[in-house]
Image (cartoon, rainbow, N blue to C red; front, top):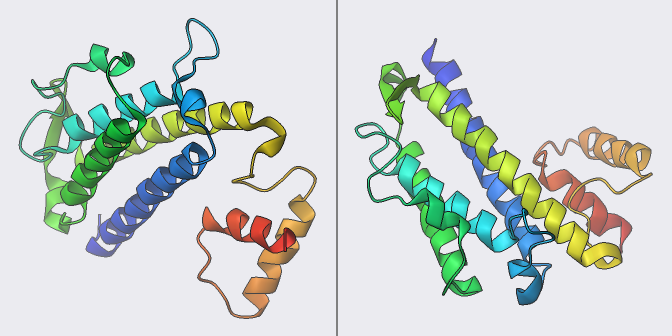
Length: 200
C-alpha cells in the first residue's frame, strides 16, 4: 500500500470519527436530562448507557494503541451498561476523554505504523483492520443515540440528515454549491447546512 493511499485512508478515518462524534452530540443536545437517562423498555439501553459504553471502549482501545492489547485490564465493560451515580455532566466528560484518547492515538500515526500488528482481546489486527473495526462499532452506537433522541423529541426533532420528501431539493442544493465552486462541504455537514437553509 502506497504512502499516499495510507495517508488518504487515515485522513478519511479521522474525519469520519469526528463526524460521528459530532452527530451523536447534536442528537444528545436535543434531549432533556430525563430523556438522556430514559430506557424505552427493559432490554433497551438509554442514551446515557450508550455514551458510557462508547467512552469506555474508546479509552480501552486507544490507550497505548500500538503497544498494548485493546482490551485493557482497567476496563470493566459490564459496568458500562450500568448507570448508578453517573450524571449527564460526568458521562459527557468521560465521552470527551475517550474521544481525545482516540485522536491522540491516531493523529500521529505514520505510514510505517500501518505495517504493524495490534491485538484486540488477543486477536491480531492490522492497523487498518483495528481502525475500521472501531469506526463501524462507533457508527453503530451513534445510530442508536440518534434513533433514541429522535424518538424522544418526536415532532420537535431537528433533523440531522436530509428531511423526508426533500431529497430532490437537497440534490439541487449540492449541485448549486458545486456549480459555484464550493467543494468544502463535508458529507455529514451538508444535510445540516441544507436544513438551516430551508428553515431561513
